[in-house]
Image 1 (spheres, rainbow, N blue to C red):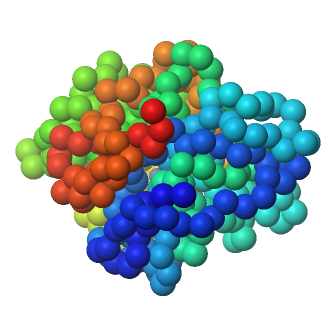
Image 2 (cartoon, rainbow, N blue to C red):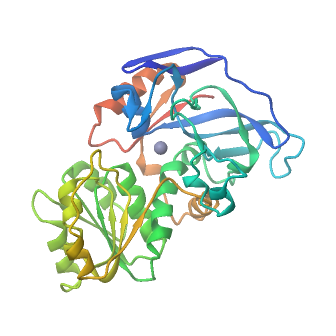
Image 3 (spheres, rainbow, N blue to C red):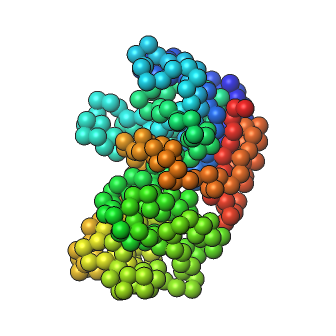
Length: 345
Ligand code: ZN
């Protein structure tokens, strides 16, 4: 079966790759339809590693997928052949302490697609646990199913924030995750979300949504925009999605007294933090790593039309053109949010 294989840093091949495993009682065999290209896939391609995860052997890329059931294991009751699904890419050990606690996203034993040495899903068929495969309602397309993965991070962030109806939120960074977080914050009850970045084309994309206000930090700081919007009180919730040290230093100037900061962005190196500034406001700090028990909610919101992610799909490539899709994603065009690859017709 042909797969998109990262042979080593900088070298992609669309070639035969033997991977299919047996369909266990609780598994499903899925025909992959659409796969989104994630920043992490591109980073493995361009750098060969992310933190401690190093590509040491050929690895299939891709973890943001939708598809259709080809075969269901004997114990699977909620899915049957023909059902359209999207999949959580991380499979925890169901017997682990983290799984028992419901925080399976931080299970040290989690096996996550396209995170070395685990293979990804840019291949026509995969076998996956049915428990991590979610049926798509009729009005949710394969393309939307494949963009649920990054949106799930946004929703996990909104849940972590403990948003109250009418909150004013600020988001630093309008990359793909910043955009997902902003939309999730609105869906979660925020009255207004102020999004800051210096890439104007990205701000223009998110600014098209109702309830979003944008700030180009080349002209104004996020803290002054928030001060203006909140009569100098500060934002109830600040989502840090840039991972940039100056933005992290500024957090105490943006959050309101008693407010919440959610750290979503991942700085490459350790960064300094203004602890006293945070203490003086008794800010609550939350962190986010992927998501747990979020996919159902993400699908519900998209099916209800409360969240429309379709405008964020910037281009779709055929499977044969997967390498071109990665080259386009690696260009990091400021007008691109999500590049997808359509594996099946
Ligand atoms: Zn992703």
